[in-house]
Image (cartoon, rainbow, N blue to C red; front, side, top):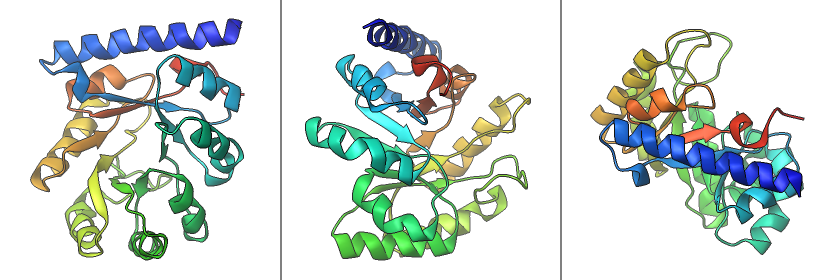
Length: 223
């Protein structure tokens, strides 16, 4: 019971902060969706969040998501699941079957595999291009200079491209990176921006985020 109350309280406080950040940026709070990141957290924690009104969740790994979300999705048909971690091409079939959105489309081979598998399964998942906004060698994502061409290629493949996603460099002011992602999206006619996590989501909202990915502020430290 204590965990359930804590998650509900954390969500309520987080929603207040999201609303305040949106209003501070002269935006409608409804324009910002919360993706609750459940990496390493048990299905019971997800259920507690659902009971507190949360419906959109994010998982980093296909295998972990397969262990807890099929049963939850069967019980809660309004639940929506986003893949927010790297996707290997050999996991594309499982990802298309389980997830509702793929936020980490980052290379031609993956885009092609996703398009082919969605056709095979008769599904059309929302897709986001992941941009390596800080051009960091240890991170996945398309380089900003290559983003326009890759976005065009994804559209040619028929992907339902909704927007862009990024993780700014750690330890730096995230605002310039969020603004750069917003500029790339704007010039490509993409409406959605998945950016901002527990430490910087308010800055991301000020820069135009439409989805913020928050885990620790809801569920506590990862197990």
